[in-house]
Length: 98
Image (cartoon, rainbow, N blue to C red; front, side, top):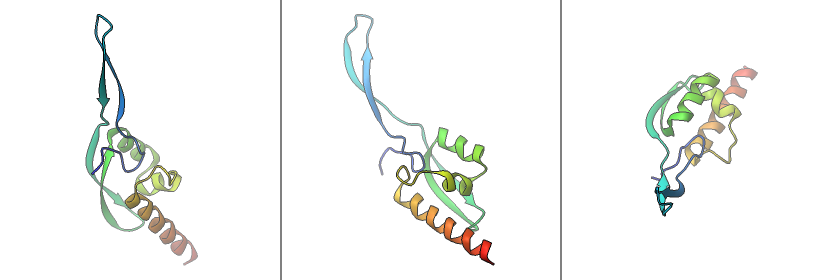
């Protein structure tokens, strides 16, 4: 399991620790990942994802998982999230036609 958010693609970044004497040593900045269960209203099911805390706030701000995935760029999403996005899009088209 990689240290990357499944929704936003936010991953590990690298940089320097800089001491008072201006010595530089390499370090890693890890994203704040949390395991959450989100509800998809369109699919009527719970989805477990490992996302960053910032992504969780974005999901809530946009009005839920379905709305977030509808606007999300597919290139940033994980394979599971891309599959979920396709399922949600297909289901919404079916509901609109019925």
